[in-house]
Length: 510
Image 1 (tube, rainbow, N blue to C red):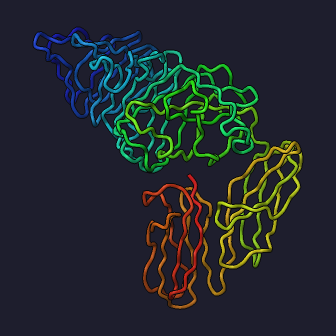
Image 2: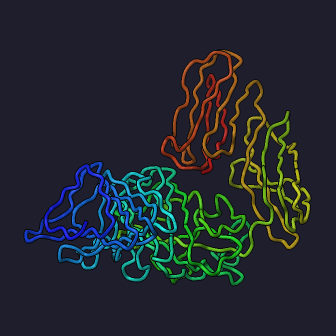
Image 3: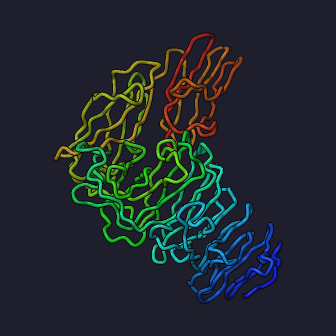
């Protein structure tokens, strides 16, 4: 198809295009390819194709028979150079890049220049199939960075934003674990070839996290570039948790380990503006993530989102010269009679002097309660255990390990929790900590009036799991804070039995 001077209709049709697809504005200024729900425009050419059209498409399938390009051209005698998909449309990639001229911001410069692909469907999962031969390509250079505008309500789900340059496939994946608030309205995304500034230490001279110094010892951030996002909300973020993954391409200085860093001040050349979130990390770096993707979990929308519709949120790749010295296989804690046994195992160790066993009753402030020797350097699996005899019934204890090298470097492990039962009451939470779901389990010896409630750390009630009379027996209730619109964190389950109160702490991870 090519050189339309009248208004063709594509409503409800599946249209395959092997050459250029150019719909010119007629004398009345109305010519456009008109589509509706259920329509698909598929690009199938074996060579470079051109696209020009004023109207909104249904869905688009980039499926060229040989890896080439679909270049979006200006139309209608103005500077418009964009492709728009409908509120029910999808964008599917297989082979071939969509090439756009980019935009400076949402309104464009001048106002008529929207050089991006616009997806008006707000649902997650509506852009699929992207790969290193098929994505949205821009120049990656100032000032027209932005090449994709994806509508969103901030709903839970995966948003793939496949941007890059003609030589760099640089997909940005936002995996919203809880609802992003306030509603971002849209993600305007682009890839920037600029290399982030080298931050010599995110927290000054102190160890950054997990005994790893990012950007230290002469190791620079990954030099592939960075990602920019502008949202449609001028308010700062208030709630929401997401995991971020960056597809790396075109770098030349990969180090021993990587993670995602952010910058919400729009200043890539200012080292101090690049930060880690959460800090310390919810999951520490354990080795080289390249060729990617590089990921970071449990990032907080309230922390990273700029209070602006013009200042971009930026993501880049921080690097570490030193991955973790110990690879853990498991770490558990469980009540055994009147003690709590902490057990862990490792797959490999390097320069490992040993472990401080640390304990807390609130999951935040820890004290050292014991020491277990390590095995130095080994690739063999090793089993460890420590028995805590100084425990009381009815209290939840949290445990973690401080692994120390012979040279003084150290790493803090994840947390685990356990308790021993109160007299005449079996009341437990398992697993704890947990990611997807935990179970609150208790046993009654007599008919009782029972209220089972969960509160967050601010004292706000999350839910009431049960309220009423229960007969003797064992009861189990599943719980996940995200199900009730809350993010991961520390929660308290409160059980009231015949006016007597018992509590347990819950530790929910992403």
